[in-house]
Amino acid sequence: MYEWLKSIPLVWGTIIAVAGFAAMIIWAWFRPKSYIFKDAPDQRWWRDLRIWTSVLLALQIIIYLSF
Amino acid sequence: MDIGGIDLVIVITYLVAIPIFGFYFKKYVKTEKDYFLAGKMLPWWVISMSIIGTNIGAYDYMGAAGGAYRFGIAQAHYEWIGAIPAIVLSALLFVPYYWKAGVYTVPEFLGKRYNTAVRVIEALLWGSFLACVLGVFFWASGLMLNEYLGIPVEFSLIITAAIVGIYTITGGLAAVAMTDVVQLLVMFIGGLALTVLGLWTVGGWSGLVEKIVPSHPQHFKLFLPLDNPTYPWLGMIFGLALVLSPAWWCCHQAIIQRTLGARSEWDAKAGMLFAAFPKMLIPVLVVLPGLLALALNPHLAGSDMDKAFPWLIKNLLPTGLAGLVFAAFMAALISSVDSTLNSAATLWTRDIYQRFFVKKASDRHYLKVGRILTFGFVIWAIIFAPLTKEFPGIYVAMQTLLSIFQGPTFAITLLGIYWKRANQWGGLFGLLGGVGISTFLFIALDWSFLYIAWWSFVGALVITIIVSLLTKPDPIEKLEGLVYGLVIKEKSIQEALKKRAERR
Image (cartoon, rainbow over all chains, first blue to last red; front, side, top):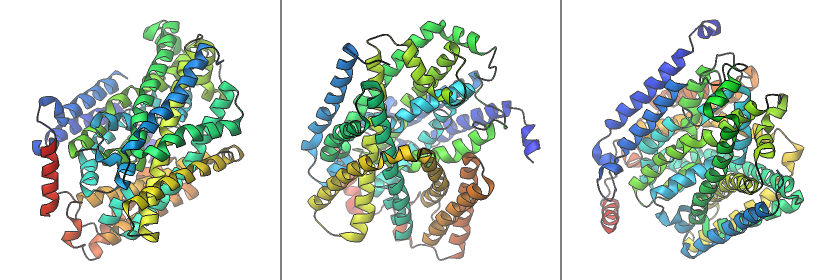
């Protein structure tokens, strides 16, 4: 079992990580707007936590594709 | 690093200014809620900076730089894949439920969701862990003041206690969070000064790569083979990213407590989420110095590799910057000590004292108890700290203890919030069974803590589901406001939330 796992190319680490980050961005955009802005003083675009999430995870994708 | 002249002025100014600044917030503390939750008035930007100040300790500087010296940039997994996705999950999935439940601690939430036994087990585990960690932090602080300023260790412990104690005992979470903001700025300024100077010395990023890659070709690869003892890629994904990291960011009392003090649900979520931005930059402060040390001196071997950071400071910093970097070191340490102190007192006051000893006393009574307990933990830390010297493995032992109960805690919290059929018996047996599995794996198979965390999480998840399905469901009224899809219907709570939103 362990030998079989060892034969998996390392690039799969990057593929799984990047796919996970991308999936989280999509998931965040499925959160309802009312939930994201609940209790917020206003609904300006920069208070949209889905945008914050997308920027964060996009940066992670760039980092994991670079190294 | 020799501290003298202007450096000494910087260090002393910092050490005097922090308690004075923190003490200022005493005037805002009138009730138990003011003390433990900053009166539920914290804005998102304070929460995020305080979270990272709490998260990064002096051990991170030393350990991460040593890890980077040995294995390279893979060390940064702990700040990237081992933090960012979990912070997003915590902000968007967990924090809103904790905040809405109006609790002071994570065990209190689990007690509401499951039963008192789960609350007590969690409170004792976290309470003991935080109390022991305090001793280790105090000892590290004493050693630093001793090594760099020449102050005797015993006296250094008392200085640390005085600095942290003054504002933590009097000002509670508000003082802790506000001082953390300043400490994070000091950490970044000092850390960046060292990194920039180091990069300039080695000829920039390209110079760094050229110096390291020929002899260490794996040092700029994030994913390392499975036979790597510390960073096997599967362990990084399944153990760290999927279990340990969410368990830390979604269930750690010292981290979550800041969001519980948020002035609104949006501030709680935004505070946690924004913490990911400074977190993403932490490798520049703690990982890059390890690589810089390797480029400048590739001859450190064995345990000396852990001294990569001090080596860099000693051999790179000119007079004037040494004081700044030392202040950054102390800021990292003190911002973790004050948060741990405050969270330990909150846990013991709310989950033990208030639950078992004096159930219905006045607000001022619990405020007084909170302050006495905080003072008690300061004294405890001074007494406990020297034991760290007698038992050098104590910090590793505590981290192991943490990994033993983190997986199961995360499993029952996740099911507690997102599966209404999970009941009190499922939660209790899931927690106990998960801890049993990780203890067995640790003792019998001596596995890496990354794999132990994964299997104890899976085990706790399965046990909770099976036991819950075999026993009676909890009444739906008990779950309202605590579980996804079951919003609080109580009119008075909805009205209060609406009024608060209008006031802002």
